[in-house]
Image 1 (cartoon, helix red, strand yellow):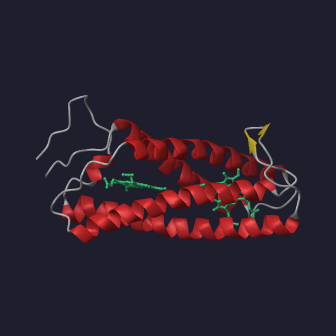
Image 2: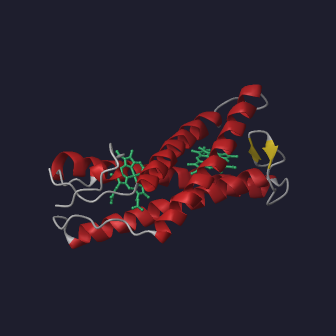
Length: 186
Ligand code: HEM
Ligand code: HEM
C-alpha cells in the first residue's frame, strides 16, 4: 500500500478529540431533548451538553488555528483533481458546521434563563431570557445538527472508501504514528 505523507501529530490528536466530542454532542443532544421537563435528569444532560460543547469549541478553535498556520500534506497524485478539490471543499464545510453549531448552541442557551455554563461555572450571557428568540436559535441549532450528521456520514464513507477501495494511504494520514520516525515518502 502506498504511504502518503501524514498529518502532524497535533492535527491527528485534535481531529479525533473533536470527532469524539461532536459524536457525543449529537448523541447527548438528541437524547436530552426527550427527557421530561423539570426533572433533575434533564438539567444534568443539558449541563453536560453545554459543558462538552464549550470544551469542543476550545478544541475546534485550536484545530482551526493550527490548520490555518500549517498546510495539509499533499494528497496522492492517484486522486483526480476534482476529487482533491472536493475533499478540500468538504473539509471547509465541516469546519463551517463546527463553528456554526457552537455559535447557535451558545446563543440558544444565552436566550434562556439557565444560560451557558461550563461544569457549573456560569459563562457570559450573549442575550436575555426570551422564549421566541431562544426558539429561533434552537431551531437553527437543530437543523445545523441534522445536516452536520449527514455531512459526517458522507465524510466517514469517503474515509472508508480510501481505506477499503482506493487503498491509497489517505485514511492512514489521519492515524497516530507509532514512532517518532519521519514519514516515508513514495
Ligand atoms: C464528527 C466527526 C468528524 C469530523 C467533524 C471530522 C472532520 C474532519 C476534517 C475537518 C478533516 C480535514 C482535516 C484537514 O484540515 O486537513 C478531516 C480529515 C480526515 N478525517 Fe475526519 N472528521 C470526523 C470523523 C472522522 C472519522 C470517524 C473518520 C474515520 C472513519 C475520519 C477520517 C478522516 C481522515 C482519514 C481524514 C484525512 C483526510 C485527508 O488527509 O485529506 N474522520 N476530518
Ligand atoms: C458542535 C457542537 C454542537 C453540536 C453538534 C450540538 C448538537 C445538538 C443537538 C443534536 C441537539 C438536539 C437538537 C434537537 O433535536 O432539538 C442540541 C440541543 C441543544 N444544544 Fe447543542 N450542540 C453543540 C454545541 C452546543 C453548545 C456549545 C451549546 C451551549 C453552550 C449547546 C446548547 C444546546 C442547547 C441549550 C440545546 C437544547 C435546545 C432545545 O431545547 O431545543 N450546544 N445540540
